[in-house]
Length: 166
Image (cartoon, rainbow, N blue to C red; front, side):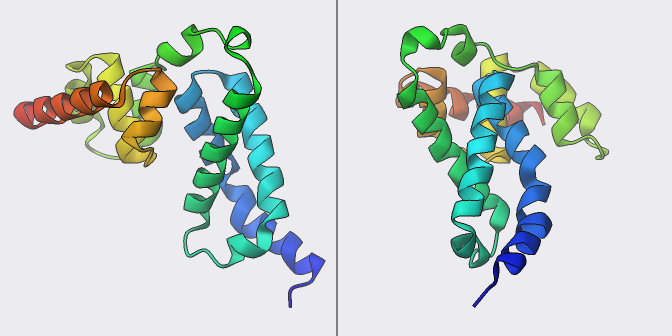
């Protein structure tokens, strides 16, 4: 049986280090820093609340990402559309900024920047959310307010174009 002190140590060593990764994921998902901060706080509260379950996970970060996705859905359900301007969902974050954060330390940065510059921002955003952050295409469709088949088509075209470029 774990004590409260053990839980505190586990939280500091295995959960808290992922705070900024979750915040970055939510910022890219929502294009709204305020919503991202609100949801990441709710996620950290849930992590403490369900710490015993998180202890059993092989990949704590994946569990926290799943929690943050659920908290983001709850946030959107709680706040009516008139509280959340549509621009927040449709305006993608800067591709240069996302690429720099994702692959800052690699030698392929220049090549990827060049390849992603040939894509439109929506396609780049879909690829990054889906392949880097492991967000399902259905969830991306919800985030963008688009039909799932449209997002699937954009994703497939972007992959095809990247293969042609490479």
